Length: 478
Image 1: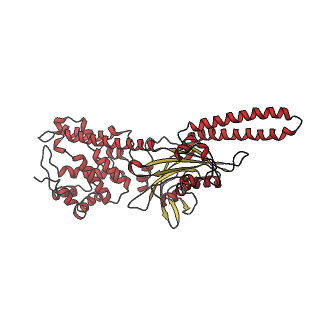
Image 2 (image 1 turned 60 degrees about the horizontal axis):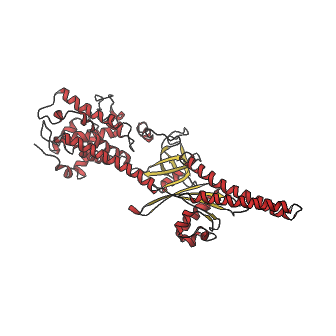
């Protein structure tokens, strides 16, 4: 039953990425245990891998929750992975996507352009050397002519390579296996406050300092030792000074013009990351604004949405739910009454008891909240929670007549929180109840409207977690 509720939550609504996958893992006896079904068809709990497996994404996620890296998944595929640890259970949520899908197009374009130019330069120089050695033969004169032509072409290609790399806003340089600079573009020179030619043959440590140089050298060593492209994402600084950089390390085999080393492309992606975070903040501000609009249209229910969200989160934490479900309960609680913007203000502010038709319109407005938010991507099942808020534990609710555990736990929590906040708050047609009378009313409906576990968590929060002190000020008894 838990699997039927939990594992579908790992799927992202509207997921467009073909290889994206969300997993639940935990550490157990020196192994990584995969708790959720896998994309390759393995069922939940069917796969365990040694936590010491080199480069295993799930092992890295357990060791460093919240970090981001390029590693290998359970199938051995190279992936971009990040994670988040749960607070109350020894589980970790891992989000991964194939590196080829995430960065393939950009990597391929840059790799083809840069490596192609250097390979072409290597071929030209190799041809030049062959011609030079042949200059002592009977065709010395003809070889000399070809030599001049090749030299001219080499110089032209070198200028082209310089033009292409200097036009890049990214830092581009080549360092040999000993960490000495063999090539640097204009951006790299500007970062070092030197001319490009002055960087040649200097060690990265002398240019950047030992600590900063080691960031590049470590990536180069991995690329050379494993013979693969390495991608790193570094975060430095705090607050306004925070910078996010994406660094690509491309191994280069030894050639006639270059020793064994690595091509490094360092891109500042701080603005892109900041823009994404800005969009997330904008969404939160929009939610707060919509909640304010709803509360202003019903002055008797002012701050009801915020209080419902706060109480729903408190109940979810009391039940020991995962952080993503706590956040889901809080967000859904705040948005439960969003559909009231479609209900007549005269109904919301009516002083007399509401008619059956008016009550139906208000309840329909709550269900409309889910429709208004359809298509917005939340971290948890916020929209589905709102669709099930009016379901009842006994199956007599709406819209689908779900019963018991078939109702999302977050929906059961929001239903209890919404009802309790309504009972301790005055309304146009009735005064408020005190906390004891409100709790008694909730207890009377256990097994009918509400889940015993959720109401029990509410009572425990009020009586044993200082909840009563926090909510007494809200309650306004008659």
